[in-house]
Image (cartoon, rainbow, N blue to C red; front, side, top):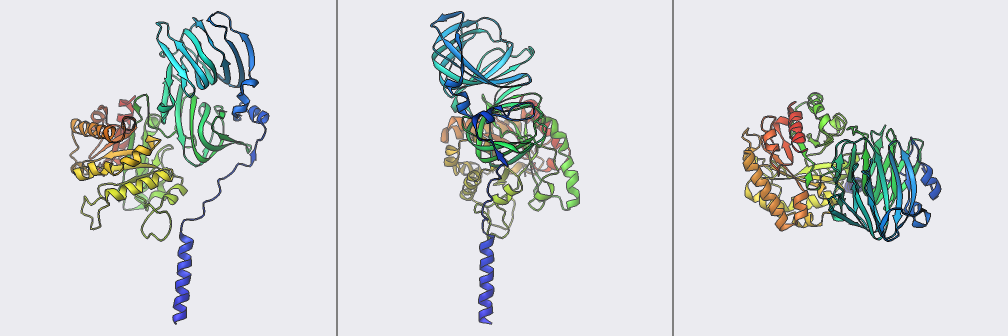
Length: 532
Ligand code: PEP
């Protein structure tokens, strides 16, 4: 008997060992990897990706055009190498030695470029000078005219979009490396220039709606054509994808890139959506639906998912996520209008293993989900659950773990003051160290407003949101304060969302009751339209 018990114990403990964190599956490598630079550069064409490693654009590979005409400073010599032309978008590289010239004819295309080396400037007609240096991203919109100067021998990778005059501003736009957090640097007409970060994992793309020219800033991914031919893309590589492209990305380590996107964007689930927050002081709005412990029956889920169908037209401007009950996450995750994220309502900070009743980040990622919500006041002991309240320290530990594992996190704070202040205080070091501020969203929910039908007045909410932002500026830094998105939660509905949305520090909503109703679409519409 004694021996049997020992054997049973051994079997059980071995089983538990097996249930610990599974060995990570090797990243799904593409079938074929193109090897030589030449082949990698010429894969491009209408249906295929084009890829150029830095060596393709090495300065000695550029063709010298000869001394420039009409120069009024120095005798600059420029050189160029095209990469690909995809409809009205062309991609290539250019270098130029020191000197300057007038550019009096208004441009007939919008040009984007990233500076690889050197220093330069462009002047507007009124003499306003825009300087740029290595690492900067520059947009010269259609219609710009003025003068060009190269102060220090420069080299750049460019993409040019030829298009009709659409009345856009002609002023150059410059983003320095420190301004390259996720979001749009520039958007006008059909052209957008944006920074995005894509987390490890596969993304299938079907019939891409836009033409995209990508410059990889960091990370590693494989991009695979429909025929299985693929390239490994790392920092310094240029990748161009035509409209209509079908294939996949396999991100091995988080990829940060700046890309020029041309065309009308759709919200197809297949299209890799950038992870987004802000640029140029603008934060992308975000609305979440918290279903809490609802509905009672799985048969009601479809109806609740359909309530989100109306958000489709706004996904281009607004992030939307839904927090179903944990039992329902896997049942609904593929039943939303494409582009809506599913975010479990909690997770642990240890991973898989002997943690009864918990959910792990590994499991969340395995379902293909990229978001999780933690710290809701109903888990912090505010609503009389006879379980110990989750502490701020626990929240900080969870947040760090979640971010380390590559997920995005909605972090709830709220009244009473102990939650509001200590809640953020506990995560100051995490926010300080966080490179991509878009990965944390703060949901501020005054406890007295949750589920009561009594929302904070817009002025109260704005004042608190601003207070939180100022507090972050003082305790973390101004950039984090400006970039971080703060949602309001507490009886938000279609009636009060338009006015709340008009306040500058309210970046979105965490919606409980109303997210179980069709009015959730009106809430998304209200903030998407208010934050244009
Ligand atoms: C919530 O619980 O997150 C919430 C905001 O609920 P409600 O919108 O119902 O007040």
